[in-house]
Length: 127
Image (tube, rainbow, N blue to C red):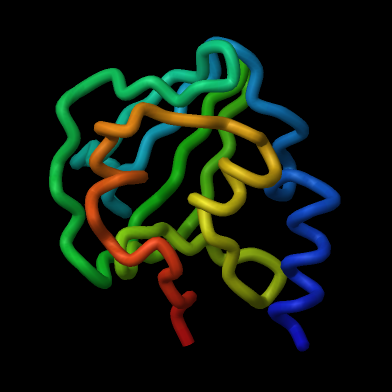
């Protein structure tokens, strides 16, 4: 039931505290200590463009999703599981892939290893 409610909220509004991702917004997936940058994208014409060679995220790792939009920085705690990042929000988890595709309507290159790395596209959130 909670999953259904979170899905409905996800359809109606972006991630909490982030109204949009305009051109130039930067998205990073980093380690919790901020020392390792796994992925770095920039938004350009509703597309996530990979800006640097990505690093492999160890399965089950805790990560942070950092989104810089203008002068605002939004940070989200999450976990990398089965080829997706699940952000902790409102007592549940939100899939980053689903949020980017369905809420923000962003697209990405077919060669992007995060979105098209041959991983399970229907990963399950952590328990």
